[in-house]
Image 1 (cartoon, one colour):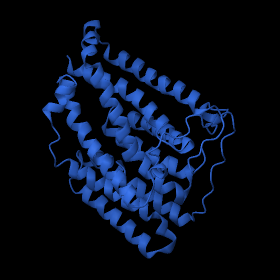
Image 2 (cartoon, rainbow, N blue to C red):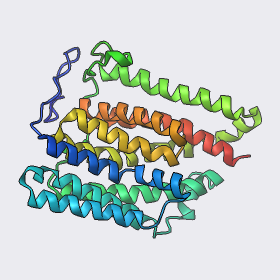
Image 3 (cartoon, rainbow, N blue to C red):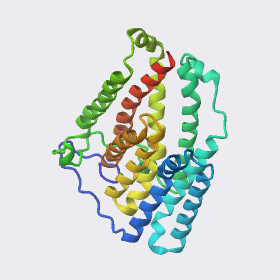
Image 4 (cartoon, one colour):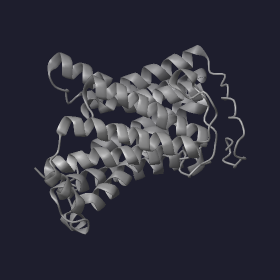
Amino acid sequence: MNRRGQKGTAGRPPAPEPTIGADGRRLVVSWIAVLLLSAIPAIVAAQVAGSVPGWLVVAQGGIVALLVLAAILVPRLRPLWRYGVSAGALIAFSWAATLVDWNVPALQGLLGGSAFDARMQAEQTGKLAVTFGMIAVLLAMRLRPRDFFLVPGDLTAPIRPVRLLGFPRPDTWRRFGLIWGFGIAGALAVVGFALVRPEPSQLEALLPVAPAIVVYAALNAFSEEMTYRAPMLATLEPVVGGRHALWQAAVFFGVAHYFGIPGGLVGAVLSIFMGWMLSKAMLETRGLFWAWWIHFLSDVVIFSFIALGLTR
């Protein structure tokens, strides 16, 4: 699909990556902003001081304010204003979400009312609220849904080959997405089983929770794609080009998983690769589906192990 979202024919070579005439100053400022607004400062603080200071979110809000002010005052930085606004919105909505009790027992009961529902319902409801807020901000900035990838995209678009990573040919995303979606999920399952070694009785206990796992995995994949990836790609790609925007979104997404599942340095590195893959899917298909699909399958595995831990 081209940049306007029109379908092409299967089997065609991938379109060349667009070249954006961003000067070095704009590129450097965008990278500094992305790194400072990511989880990297929190990781450093946790390692040095043993905890993440409460004032960090205020400091990151100040960085956003400086970025937007610079975009207003410096003509060469002006194209970064949309990224600054979307980054500020993410910080504000994420902070505001922590002030609300999203626990709704009636919603938990719809999927069984298990301990897994009790944990996931509030978390996923809060994430959805942030997601809808981000979509509203993108629309308010006069971006159309297809501009921020809120469309399925071209499911048969060719991938841009990366020989060093084992992608030597422009396979279609239909084939590539299926293989890598199930492949990544399968690898996570193998590692999880090797670490947890669940008993057959524990696996049987997961069956009643399976619908909830699928629903919450689908919601989580949608929320994270439309909160952490699509806004960054939509606001940075026109400014710094697809290659830099892809890596900026990948790093931002990946380092956040230092505190997640899988966590630590290994989890962050693996998640950066995952973020790169999902950003690549979104940019090359100009839509959400394959990024959501790969993310969803991985979350099904991860959420299964979370549910498994809650059944013990």
